[in-house]
Length: 389
Image 1 (cartoon, one colour):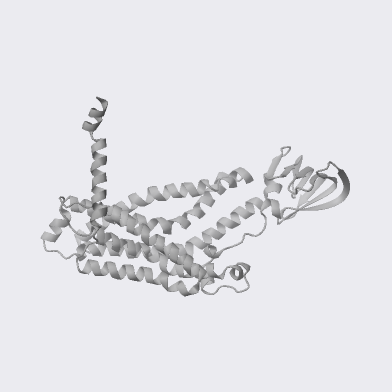
Image 2 (tube, rainbow, N blue to C red):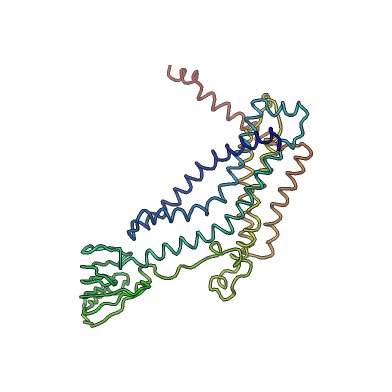
């Protein structure tokens, strides 16, 4: 690779990181805060919360990465054009491949990285996160609830214990169950124990009070009573959807799997999405080259290349999501997922080979330029002084 190509590659990669890290951090923080209830509801440590946050990170990288690449390419090439570097390269008679090669090499590497993350890192991370949440809630009663403190497990269900002993033994149990509108249940038990799976609470030597809306109360004493915890603790085995499955499973789904039988279209759409969505970094790189890869005069009025590139990138991503939903509904639409990257790559390659640029309609460009001038006039110091007078 030539020295100039290394220079361009380094600048684009640096701008790519500058765009990726803040956006990725913001989205990651939003996703993590949405699961803060794992700590507040189940009393898990911050270490467990950090592990869960780590599992979430691979799920957002493939979505954010292509847009960061588009920003890095367009911003770098625009800055090089403004600094007259692109015009100098053209005036020296250098081939356009000096600009194209480092961009396409970086885009190809990031596309491969996206494929690996989406197919071999993200599914295990999703599964591990689901299992972690399920395990935390499964152990809710036996290890989390504080002694001599009422705890709301869910709407209408409250639990208090006097003491916790080794071997998952609880003493002084008090359970209030108001989830059924037809009657309220109040359980008292001298002792209880939770099975290893966390799905059943066996209470011994106690009584249950059953109260109807009319105020009638019946009391039943029991020697042993089993209380189902699966509904209130979320201790059921986590159910896995198509996005949680590995590529191997998607290629040959189990026909006996309940979720596969219930929603076969989601597995079909997820499979073909995995086989095509990794091309988005390469597609966005070509679009960015078409938009910002040519040298232009500063006097030539045009929208900022980053605006055009991001609009086109969002449009392509929206089409990808839309086609994926169509494939989920009807298998006959599968070709659309493969047609989108193919057509985009062919059109962009033709425009780059013929040195043609994407032309923004004059009406749109004129409106944007007028709006930009109006904003500058309103924000200029002279306008501010006139307004103050």
